Length: 257
Image (cartoon, rainbow, N blue to C red; front, top):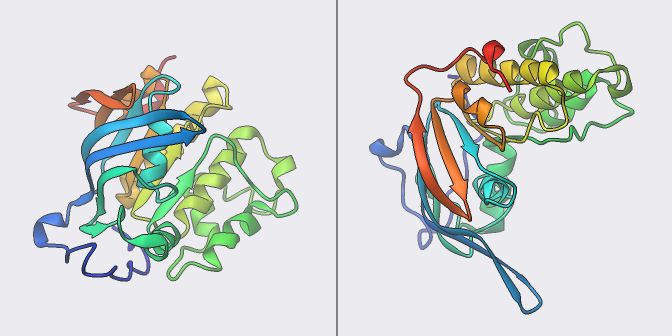
C-alpha cells in the first residue's frame, strides 16, 4: 500500500500511548463516542455511546436516515469535530484528547474527504484543483496520476464548468487521494448525481479502495450501496443498531436503486 505521508507528531504522553503491534491493522478504534450539540437551552444528542473499529483496507458503508448521526460520526472520524465524551484513537494515537495541533496534522496528512458538493475552484483546471493538495502534501502523487486513477486523464486541463457533475466529483476524489491518505471519508458522494453518473463515481471510489488499500468509509441513506461494502453499519438515533458483513462485494456496476 502506498504511504500516507508524514505521520502525526506524538501528542503529549498524558493523552495517548505508543501504538503497539496489534494496532497495525486497526485504523480507528472508538469507545463510548457521544456528541451533544447545545443550542440555547436545547441539547441535541447526535451520538449516544458509539463503539466501533475500522481496519486497514476496508470499504465500509454507514447507512441511516437523515438525522441518524452519520455525518456527525464522519466529522469526528475526520478530525473536523470532537466528541463530547468517549475516546477515538487513530492507529493508537488519541484524537479525542490530542488537541487542535494533532487534529490539524491528522487532517492534513492522513485523511481525504469527499463531500456531496464538489467544492472545486471554478477558475482552476482539474489538474490545478488537484495541485492545491499536492503542492502542500509531504509525499503526494502527481496530479496527473491522481486524475488517471479516477479515469480523467483526458480532462486534465478542463475547468469545472466544462465538466459534468460526475466528472467534477471524480476530480474531488482525485484531489482527496492525491496526498496518499490512509483514510478516505465520503459523505453522500452521489447525493447530487443521477443513478448512472453515481455508479461511475462509486466505481472510482471502489477502485481507489481496491488498488491503494485505503480505508474507505461511505455514508449514505441509499440502502442499495450496502452491497458494495465489506461491512455495513446501520445507524439510528445516534446509535449503531445493526452491523452486517458481505461475504463478497457486489460489482458496483450492477447496483440497482
